Amino acid sequence: MKKILLLTAASGLLLAGCYSTEVNMSMGNMRLIRSSAAPQDVMDFATKTCKNDFYEGASFLSKAGTEYRFKCVKAEENEVLTPIPGTSIDPTATPAAK
Image: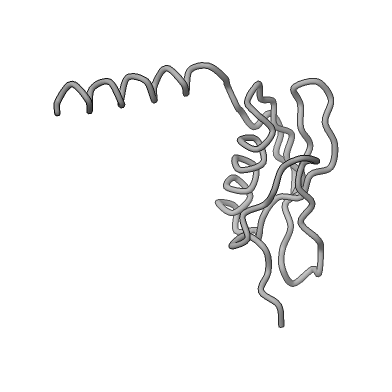
């Protein structure tokens, strides 16, 4: 049992070390994120980052190489959360229908 837990922890650390993700710029509600991760992982990271800053979620703007541009969205601004093409936004991240 201890070997399984050790292998699971070690493999998780190895997988996490295969790519890097960092916020390069944060100005107002705009975020520039540089990442070599899969697009869905970047979308999840951006959504989490925006939620940590008291926004509803992240809306994808553009991609250039490994740089992704996002806009953090507030629910009361009636803005739409746009995912990276080919990815999705967690349904709990979208504003509830009124």
